Length: 324
Image (tube, rainbow, N blue to C red):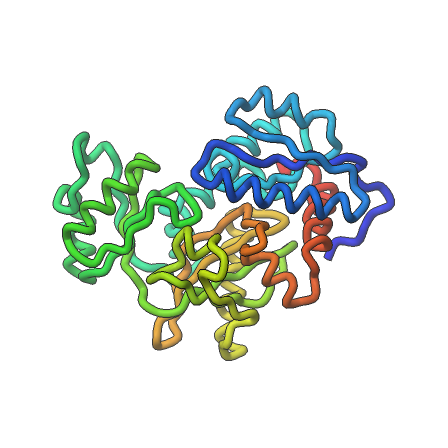
């Protein structure tokens, strides 16, 4: 936890909204952050990002600190962060380089391999392979992956979040449909081996992994509705795991966080197979902060209430300043 310094930001601009498919979730996160900071005695105000970077920088330039409550798209892929860095503004969350690296699922998985963190096998397709509809047979890499592992297969955009555009394909037809759905959200599409088992996630807060959270979704997998619908999923914090297994998963999350160059906080998602082998899926640099979000649940398990969590992240940004 970050101690409150003698000098703290006098005003905080909470940046929310954005143009990604996660806009509504960002608005929910942002309103909660504003309320939490005001309860903690900060002068905090909401600022909407609508896709115009110069306008955004001008809007928040009068604040001492920018709290990023954006999710997905420009808000999480490094574009907003780069604009804030160029403007000399202090903000929460990872810098532009780490944000860009983490949003790229393919690049993140290559890094996981270097770190010897197990991740499901995958293939990457791009529009350069075919200009028309995507078919599994158009990609030798996907064809080989399917021959080795069979179905089901996870089809998803390479650079989206919140399970937007994701298909769990259980037939060849669903693979083709999933490829074209994912391409609506990104020019690069990832096909990944599906790992049956348990859904786990780990938040890293200021370099320290919080307890592992297990999600039992209301649907076949933890899709958008399961994440944000009322009473759609069950959560167990800490997850019912052996101490050794939990420590291994937490260590993997912390090492990936550090290797990507992340700061302040992140959340890394895992699948756990029936034989207790964990597979790292991806890292999120700006975790959700809604009433249904996982990072506040993990923090609460170690007696960090929501308002305290938000102030802690704010003070990390104030402590670290410009991430360049």
